[in-house]
Length: 182
Image (cartoon, rainbow, N blue to C red; front, side, top):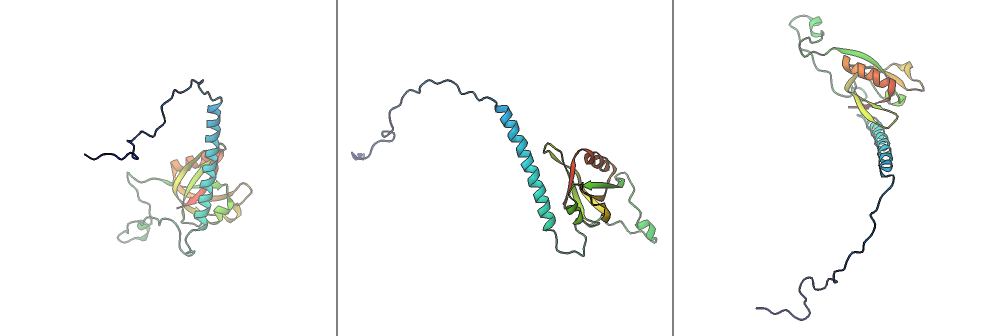
């Protein structure tokens, strides 16, 4: 067997001796829930501001082709066997969804000036408490009126399902609406 040299100590021999932990009163934090709620409220505002800045950056860094429509192309309708009117008729069936045109006031008029008919956008609603939710996803821009810009925002007309149009109208009365390009 090998002997240990006198300079090498066994593991744990260099640790200090154990001692007793002194008694102390428990620590009680007053107002902890208030601070936690305040932190959450400011965090939501920071997230909302970050989303708005990201949306503005995405719109500004959009595609460089000004001649072509941005977003997803509209689905092609099946060609009819003889008449052009049948090919332009909307699809009807059990899965067909009625699409309506909904005028929506967007809080940032500058963002609306970047939109073109045919663009696909998501409409985001932000209330006064910093909560943000997507009201309409993948809505197609059908019209951008030129004379609709005011201090309260600008108008844009979107093609959406009827249920989404109802949600947009309700959200527009209680929240500020913003758009993000897809």
